[in-house]
Length: 130
Image: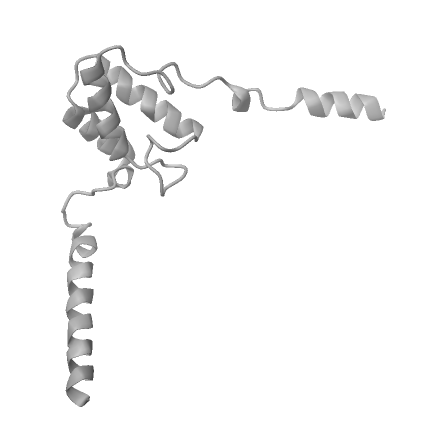
């Protein structure tokens, strides 16, 4: 009985989790210019799994799939800006390290300026007391 349970448990192991990486995930494009464009674009795109790494630096399967996708589209003749726009349309602004300025992202762009101004005011008030 124990052998049967063990055999069923091993048979139920997800095979999809052990799939090979995408074709162009770890393979460079033959054209050095296209590969340079793809690498530059990959440095600006966030890994959706790791969140703190670019897809160029991440070893996550999702990042590998995204690297392969970028290389396929660049090799297909698309410009990096078009590929970037497509990825943003598909995954949202979160996929890029440099979100566009818009209605929902303006606090991200204004907050550092406001915090810097508050820091200057606090420092100024502190120096005046001394």
